[in-house]
Image (cartoon, rainbow, N blue to C red; front, side, top):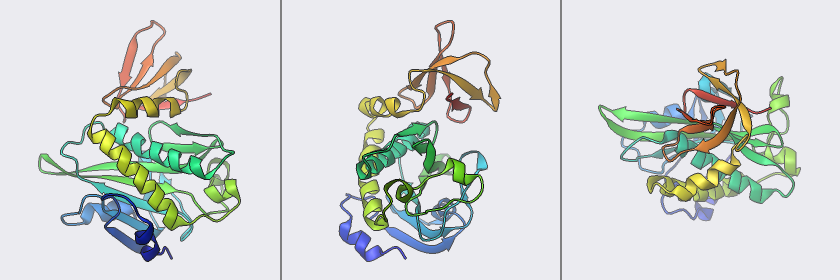
Length: 259
C-alpha cells in the first residue's frame, strides 16, 4: 500500500496535497472528488485500485492495482476558463518530473491531455469543472501515471508504457507524488496569474508544434494540412491554414494527428 506517513514526511508543497484521501478501491477518483463536501483546496484523492478510471472522450483508463499513481486534485479557482491550458500545465509538470528520472527517453505532450514517452502513453489527464448554480465550485484534475507496472494487456501493450519499463527499476510512488505535486502547484499558480511564460514553456512540448499536421475536428479529419502554432493565452489551439490565415479551435473540438 501507498505509505501516507512517508508521503507526508517528504511533501514540500505550500498547500497542494496537505489533505490526502487514500482509498484502497474506488470507481473513479474524479467521481469521489466531486462528492466531497466543502473540499479543501489542494485536496488529493489517491486510489490504489481505480476500477472505472476514465479519460478523454469517455475512454477507459486501465491501471494495475498498487503499481501506479491514479489520483485527482481539487482546485478552487474563482473562474473556470482556460481549462485546456490548466490541463496541459499539469501535463507539463508531469513531463518535467518524469524527465528528471530518466536520461534516455523522448517525452512530449499530445494535445489535449496525454504525456507520451518513447512513442507510448505514460500518463493521461481528465479535467472536470463542477458548478454550484452559476458559480464554479471546484475544478478537478484527474491524473493517471504509469509507474511500476511491467505488463499491459492486449492492445495497451502497443500504446502504453511505464516508468519502470523505461528505467528497469522500481520507483518510490510516495516520493514521485511529492515531486509531481510540487511542480503542479507551481504551474497552477502560474495558470492563475495568467503567465505568458507558462504558455511559451508548454507550446514547444506539444507533438507537432511548428509542423504541418492533420486536424480532426468533431471526429472528421480535415483534408488540408495546417501548421500547428500551439495554444494562445486563452488555451485555444491555433493553426495556420493554407491561405496563411490563423484558425482557432476549442479544446473539445480538436485532435492533432501527427504523421
